Image (tube, rainbow, N blue to C red):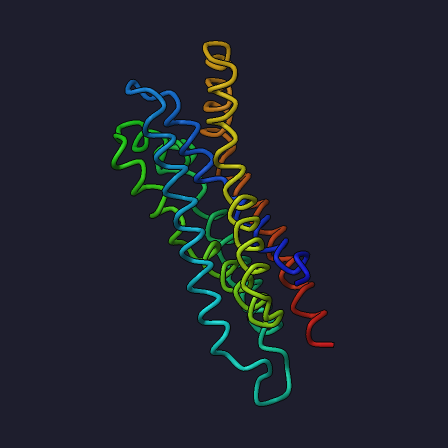
Length: 220
């Protein structure tokens, strides 16, 4: 199986600012690291479940449309349109009525969550159009490759690890650095509150371009 076909989906899911920001804010929780770790576990679980569902869906889709176009390419083009639309929407709603960045409202809500809610938050954060369309493109790549069971398991594990790596990274850094991580995490929280929405728009635009290129290449 060509693992490079899974790279756009895995990296695209990994570049999800909202779950990363949520974990960073949860690391400053008065209840310790429990809510942050639970959020990471919830996110990784959602990635794994979504990939399995996407593979099952991909196996039932034809390789080509009635017009002879690749279904995977058509899905990639649709994903590009969805991601571009999300970028426009995020840009137009990047500030609250009082002038604060919209990411500030998210930080206020996240800091009140407990461990159980942290796991649910990780699951919920994956239920967004960006992550779902990227998971579907990865599932179609699995279906086209038709790997052996052993290869499929290895590829799926690598996909989940890559997709969850950026969300887990703040927890790993905080655990390794201990009290020394307090200052950089505080600075990161301030930066996310100020620039988080803009960063999300940039990521969405880049992913839309990647999916557009993948779709156009598949149509040739």
